[in-house]
Structure formats: structure tokens, C-alpha cells
Amino acid sequence: MARKVVILGAAGRDFHNFNVFFRDNPDYKVVAFTAAQLPNIWGRKYPPELAGKLYPEGIPILPEENLPEIIRREGVDLVVFSYSDVSHQYIMERAAIAQANGADFMLLGPKSTMLKSRKPVIAVTAVRTGAGKSPTSRRVSSILRSKGLKVVVVRHPMPYGDLREQVVQRFESLEDLEKHKTTIEEREDYEPHIKMGNIVYAGVDYEKILRKAEEEADIILWDGGNNDFPFYKPDLWITVADPLRLGHELTYWPGSVNIRSADVVIVSKVDTADRDSIIKLMENIRSVNPRATIIEAAIPYSVMEPDLVAGKRVVVVEDGPTVTHGDMGYGAGYLVARKLGAREIVDPRPYAVGSIKETYMKYQHLREVLPAVGYGAQQMKELEETINRIPADSVILGTPTDLGRYLKLNKPTVHVKYELQEIGRPNLEDIIGRFLEKVGI
Image (cartoon, rainbow, N blue to C red; front, side, top):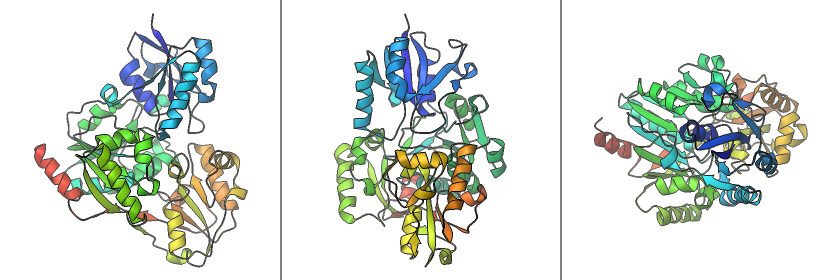
């Protein structure tokens, strides 16, 4: 008889693991996905059009908090953990819940889940979300484009809408962001690449996405999400490590896989971290991956309108994942406010509404910054209302994209920009040059 399975997820890795390992496998019957980390992603179904012939009714997506009940009610044999950016302690707590209720526990690794491409693949991953992965991806893309290569970026999934409409998504223009009804989280990751001239693919079925991307790419750039490992087998694997969260490179999953697997490790934020943390981080990297090339890099911040910060009462909006489940209490916006001499950083918590208020209740380490959570139209409206209620002179947007383009705000905004700058040699241009020679480009 087929073993009954529950897949623990957060609308991304879980669907990929199902597609490549369980979908057409008669030895298993997936009775449910569960959802955690993000709001509004449970209560849906993984539709039969994606689930395959073994699942004519589709598969329900249920709250993870109901896991013990689901295991007992469905007679579950196996619980498969399938999301990222969690501590090793967190994972083992879920393993204990599974086993205490009678189920085995599994982690699927790269060998079982990576797809092989016919085109060269460069992957950018991280040890934690918010480590500096996005500016690293942009830097890699810029180097490749300067050599006349067509870069197709494949982003880690963020399928928060109708899954049947998100099987394969292709973004070439900013208008495509509207066509696909993208959320703030998606826009933040796709828009910078689109503005550079890259094609971006994302969606649900990454086998189909890969084959489409191969048709128009010289190089495929895997731009990872959270601290997940790639869905595609990399020919060059770059991992970004964060000295501001020293030790997490060894204690958070699956970033601890990325740090051990990388060909190149970027030690980011050396312009804001203390030197002792940077040195200790490099020691930790060498202790588990002595073959990796280590590159130090700064991520300097700049704004076009410093007068909107200096001497002003400001509200700071930061990248949502970085300051929520990424555990950072601040980001680029906060650093800019301090550097440019804001008169006051207004505490946004008393003005939060709806799901934004709930976010503060869940992530109680947050104090002076507002997380840019926007996983759907309703939450985007609540973020807009929260910002507009805050008594401030201006809004500092420490987010990858200018949220002022999507939200109707009643205050002037200043958007923080940041790019990766390597220090010393070898740098990424050296590494990528040698890689291109190796693969014959």
C-alpha cells in the first residue's frame, strides 16, 4: 500500500518537492500540504491540473498548527519538511511532533530534487534571507550581460494566487507584473532584474519553467529565495553569508547546506559588520567548506533625496522577509535613517492595522521598522493604511523596489538603493570569467 504523506511547506519548496518526487510515484499518497510562515496561503487546494493523474481531486492545503490532528485523522506514515530559513532546533521540533503522533520524518535533499539543465547554471543562494542575495544576483547578472550573454533569471517560487494560472510565468516588462497580478514580495524580486533587461521566470512547475528558460538563455541564473538550495543543479554555486548573524551559517537550514556546497562564498556587509565577526565567519566557512573561494563584499546604501531624511520624523519600511522570519530587527532603511540624521524614527506599531498588527504580534523582535509584507491585495491595502496613519514627515523605503509605485501614500518617500561591491581579488568578475572559459562560452 502507498505510504500516506503530509508535506510541510510555505507555498514554494513544498510544491517543487511534490512535483519532482511524489507526483507520479505510486509508492506514496500525499494527503495534504500544510502552510506556515506566510499569511493567506492555506485554505486552498493544490489543483488536479498540477497534482497529476493520481490526484483527481487535488490536494488540500491546511494550517501547519493542525499537524497532529491531520496525522491521526489520515493515518499519516510520513511527514516531509519542505520550507526554508528555519533553525535546526525548529526542524527537530517538527520532527518530534511528527514522531510523537506516529509518523516518520523526512528531509529531501539536493540529489532528490535538483533538475539538470542543458544550459550552464549559476546559482546564488544564502545562509539566511536578507544576507545580500539580491544585490549579488544583480552583480552576477551585470557581469554576464557585459560579456554579451543573454541572462534568463529563474526565481524561487512565490505562488500566492491561483496556482493554475501560475504554472509558468514569464516577465519581460513591468507591464507583465500587472498582468500576472504580482504581490509586493514578487515585485521586489522581479522588478530589479526586469529593469536590467533580464527575462525572469517563476511559477509552480520548475521542470516546465526550466525547459522554457533554456529556449532563450545563454546562461540561467538561479536567484534563490530565503536560504533555500537551488531547484536546478548549479555549474557554479555562490552562497552569501551574513556577519550580522554570525553562527547562523552553521545552525539554520538549509543555509547550512548552501555554505557546505558553495564554490564561492560572499561575506557580505563588511562595511557595517565589526571585523571580529567577519573574521569568525570566515573561520566558520573554512571549517565546513575549505575548498570554497571566499570574497569579502560591502553593500553601501544611497538615496537620491537625503533632505527627506535629515532632521525629519521618518517611518522606516524594510524588506518583509528579512525582518520577519529572517530575524533581523532592521535593514537598509534603518541604517540610512541613522546615517543621515533623522530627527526621529517613528514607532509604527501603534498604527498597524489588520494583518500588519498580527505580524507585530508574531514577530515581537520588531520595534522601529515596518515590515513590507504584501502577500495579497488585502494585505497591501493594510500596509498602505498603516503607513498613512503614521505621523511622520516622510517614508524611507528600504525595500528592493519602490513601493510608492504600488501604494497610494500620503507622505513623500525616499527609496534606498544598494549594490554589491567586492573588495580585493579574486572578485566575481574573475570567478565568472574562469567559469565561462571552463564551460566553453
